[in-house]
Amino acid sequence: MRDFFHIFGVDIHEVVVFEEAVKKFDGSQGFIDVFWKGKLLIEHKYTSDDSGYVTVKFTKLAQAQKIVVTNPVSNESKTININVVSRFSGASDVVMYYFDGSKFKVKVIGDDGNAVGKNQVVTISLNKKTYRVKTDEKGFAVLKIPNTVKPGKYQWAVTYKGQTIKKTVKVKQNLKTKKYTVRKSAKKLIIKATLKNGKKAVKNKKLILKIKGKKIAAKTNKKGVAKFTIKKNVIKRLKVGKKYAVKISYLKNTIKTTVKVKR
Image (cartoon, rainbow, N blue to C red):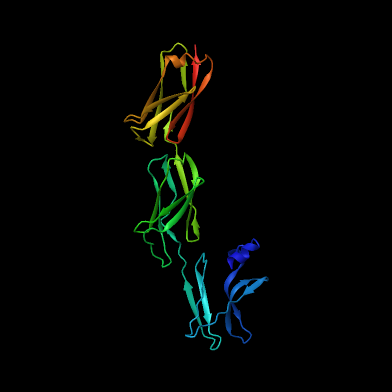
């Protein structure tokens, strides 16, 4: 029914009242399944099987529902409350430093309202990529944030059996450096870059520096500092008064700075 309203660009929950109380022609109390004042009313009728049972199949319920069943012969009514639960539990936004090992974790709920078992597939879309993640024995789907997710803010889209939830991940920059100045006559220039997750140094990681077509590698020390030595033969090729672009990378994460040459 919700899809029917969507055809006309209408949100059913903004205009419709469910189980609107009305008086029947005989003066008794009754209820209308779907009531849109001045526009539309809908009443569902179902036929019982040989055993007297009526089966109603719901494909999409987005919120709690109240079902009123009325016997057309005796006019006896019974109200049934349906509690609609999310297929996801424990999902939260993620705040992290770039590739610090953080994971997105969510418990997946089955048709019976309990956690699903192992090997149920959950689809997670992040940063224009889609991941198919299988649940573990306790029903958790876990995705380690890959190094392709660079510093910035992104939105998750997590889907299982027709339901999608959206969460955010904020990736903070953990790579820093500064601007440098060097004399044309200098024998060398030491450029430093730090890799820290907040106050925690990230040691023994390989960083790459690029300047004027040349690549230099260095590893971070116990303080999270990598030192790149620009030798005299490189400095000689630089022109006085010019600024040269410098890129420093850790995996897929790159920051930029400059080196200014003076006399």
